[in-house]
Length: 175
Image 1: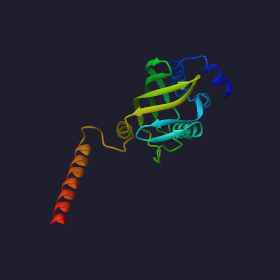
Image 2: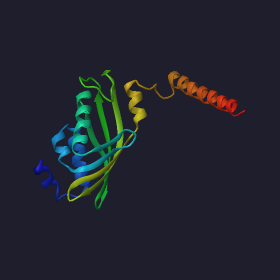
Image 3: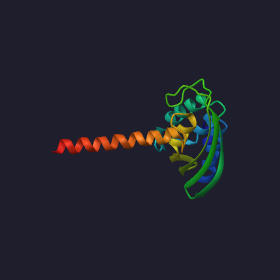
Image 4: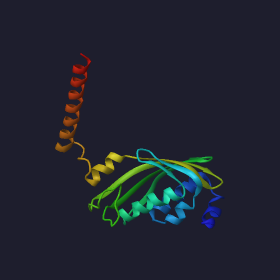
């Protein structure tokens, strides 16, 4: 692990961030985890926070076990000083044997894009804010109905009916 940290110390934030995404895309978890300063936080907006290195390792270990063909590529990269942004694209098939977020493998294929905003000090990641559309992932996995489908319209109608019923109940209780 020390070799990866020594290697990255001479690199700027954009280079470190790009190499991190590339390592995850190739499922080189040891290399990716070695790019973090211990105790730093990876904020997965909408999913939770991971404390490096253990939390990062555990989350991506679960991901790779659920999506054994996981691949990820850098689409665009920008950086200035100790900050970098990486827009990435990932593809995978949910074949397991591991679960993802408690779900049993379905065989579904996913293709998603996301963006990570990195802070880097002395060649190591000290904070990351990861953004991905969780609803899009849920739709591709079959957890949520596809956009524009009958299922989505029915779900929306159900939520609206519940909201209307709750308003009626509140009004009745206020009298």
